[in-house]
Figure 1 (tube, rainbow, N blue to C red):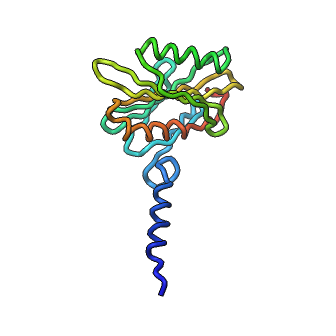
Figure 2 (cartoon, helix red, strand yellow):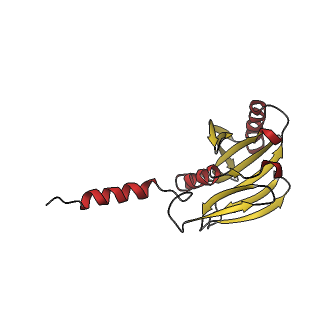
Length: 176
């Protein structure tokens, strides 16, 4: 008799390992829809998302302990993506005494995005900062996703921050 139990167990483990909160395990994620500004994102249910209308900030989602958060910002831009990105990096480095760790390009739901990560120090503590610049050229707008946590919590929190950011869907560019 052939034992299929190990194969079935391996399949289950691989299946669960490839699922993330943004797409997979029912009951572990929630979708936030900002119908006024025409975008949505997915986040872990234990995190708290809310509209947050403060200048360019339109929404935010925070970890259960409040030590990490993600803010969604919408701005208008009138320079090239490359120039904007260079100016943005300089501003973060200067304003937050931060050091650029990584910079990469990505396409998220068909949109050109720039991912940035920084290390910063504030009040004697080290912080990990993550920025996703999602350009919406047809309306000359940009969604900036800014996130951060204490550097000591980066290993646990950064994957969640990245998943929230990469779940961004622009539903209606004209509303941005």
